[in-house]
Amino acid sequence: MTRLTKESKFLLTVGILVTAGMMVANTFVNVFLLRATEGNVGLIIIQSAINFVALLVAFVSGSKLLSKISITTFLKIGITSMAFYFIAVLILQNNVAIFLIPLALFNGLGQGFYWFSTNLLVAKIIKEREQGRYFGFQQTTGSIFGVITPAISGFIITRFTDLTGYYLLFGTALLLFVLGIFMIKHIPGFTSETKIHIYDVLKLKGNRYWNACKSYTFVVALNSSINNQIFMLFAFLIFTNEGVMGNLLSATAIITIFSSFWFAKISRRENQQPFYFVTAVSSTVIYILLALFPYVPIFIAALVIFAVTRNWATVILQSLIFQLTSRAKGDYKQNDYLVAIEFPMALGRVVGMAIALLLIHLIASDIHVYRILFIVIAIAWILEYIIIEKKIKWFRDELENEDVVS
Image (cartoon, rainbow, N blue to C red; front, top):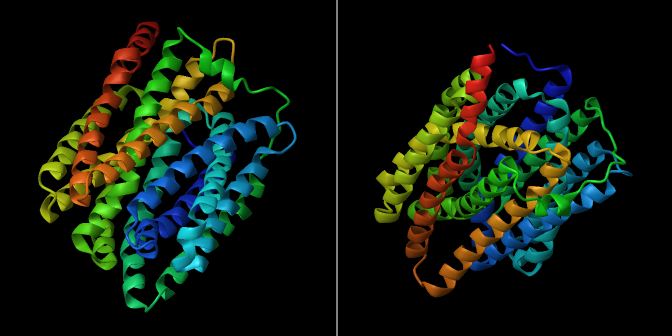
């Protein structure tokens, strides 16, 4: 069994702390914004779209400045910016709607610098043989926080009056972010005089690994942007109580812990295809059921199914991106692809938000909007699987050749 190196462990620790902070702050941030903007879902979606564009700007800026600024400095800037966003949202309270767009720009830049630096550090530090174990344990620890944070967060919000509960949550998130920044000192930084060829890579044709990566990440980003934006709002529409929602999320997250830990131990390139197939099919079915029957029992069933399977897809997605970009190299380096991939991802996110925003303006009923968007998500899950199957056959040709050589 491949052990993680010392550098890998520190990078993993930073990722875990930041993930935990994001989970504490993010669990009910959209619900908080929904209350603060008096139910203006459209404004929240516009904020997300601007956030995604700013994230892309951060990637491009990072690639231009990497010759002068260390990658670990970008990592610190990204975490600090995300922490500031949550503090600002809470301080502004009911006035947040006025500043939501500039806050979205600031938060997007922070997320962009964080993921820009994280992706390049993973590519440099984490070897391919470590990836399954690295992403698996990252997902497992995230699942553990997933048990603790929703129930405690929901309890705190409903237990304390006014916004005291949100102050406690965002304060906890800030502490986790600070710990993450402190741990960065153990990660070796680097600068690079090598130009990152973003636009040349984007124009590249005839590279099947790069084509697969572009198409796949576009659909994944469209899928996740819609789901991340509306799923908790849909849950709040059904339950209208953060405490109940938190208890449900925590209860099902217990299942995720066992599923994540088990998958971290067995995850390897050879079994990516069957696990992703099961996840895609089950997710498609449950989203269609949610669209047809948007009721509490179906929602609970969805949480259980997601608890079992969703972490499989997350680990495979992260690993796939690094596998595809490492094989796409040609005249370029992997870092070129890891930065350029943010363009199709940003496009997917913006398209997802545009679809949601269009539906909100065309359809008066929120529940009908959610139904249509759940159908879009269901289709996206099947497309994700088909793209990898059609373009690279889930690396089966490579695996067969490796078997012949061995």
